[in-house]
Length: 95
Image 1 (spheres, rainbow, N blue to C red):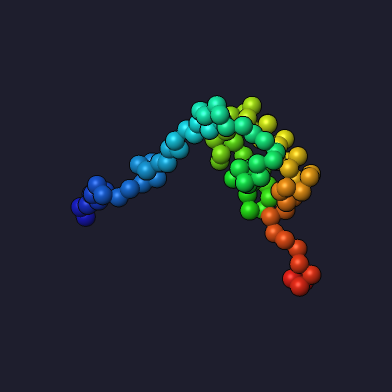
Image 2: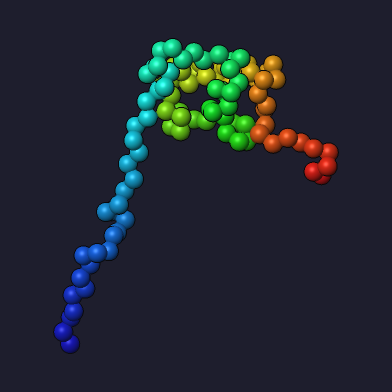
């Protein structure tokens, strides 16, 4: 019996295709005119998920310093009811 060699020129294995994420830059460091303010609810909504959780740095690309300030502004906006604590609204009809 002769062994046949299998040609694998066109197959893509797990080692050939890897996803390399582009490093994100902090938009607050790049644009010094942007200020993080708890009263800007429309700007803060971009950093909150649909469930109401604060998005992590690896998703938003903010630096550590601005992420701390951003989290504080989101928590303050939640406390004075500019942002919701949860994403979905609770209805009495949805029971």
